[in-house]
Amino acid sequence: MFKELDPILHSQLRLAVMSLLISVKEAEFTFLKEKTNATAGNLSVQIQKLKEAGYIEIIKQFKDNYPQTICKITSFGVNAFEEYVKNLQSYLTNHK
Image (cartoon, rainbow, N blue to C red; front, side):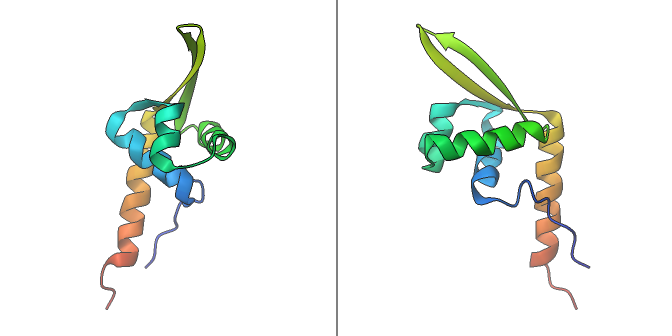
């Protein structure tokens, strides 16, 4: 039987952000923007949705008088991502 896919993670940009954060644990907004090739506005909206779901933490601070936004994956986010991948794999396995 096919497992339900998490609608929060089933968005290309949100999935890309989570995939990056899974490997690096935390990243600056500019790094995520560069790696995903997203616009600042769209990325902002999508990381806010991930934050509201409890999948990431957003830390706003200043570095050398410039604003800096850091996104950090939560343990809840790691579990949700792993579950999403496991459920997605159920679509790829041979169902006879």
